[in-house]
Image (cartoon, rainbow, N blue to C red; front, side, top):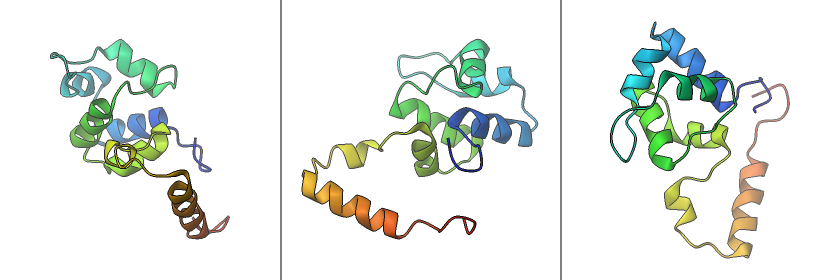
Length: 111
């Protein structure tokens, strides 16, 4: 959850409502890797933070359907994108990247 209270679920819900879609419409737009779409109940569970998106594919589907930034959705889901995970970074490199990231975080109240 971010400082403004946004979690993956609340962010998805707000974006869906901004488009004027109901849960069934969004669920029908989210394709599973194995085929078919997600159920409105599964989406409801995600929107109420009872479930998390199950895969990178799912995060990318939400970004595509709602025209949202994929990296921001990864951040809200508490996950690293696949390209970052597959980079096989050393512990020292991860530490350097995270230090640089934290150094560039907006200070409280300026976010």
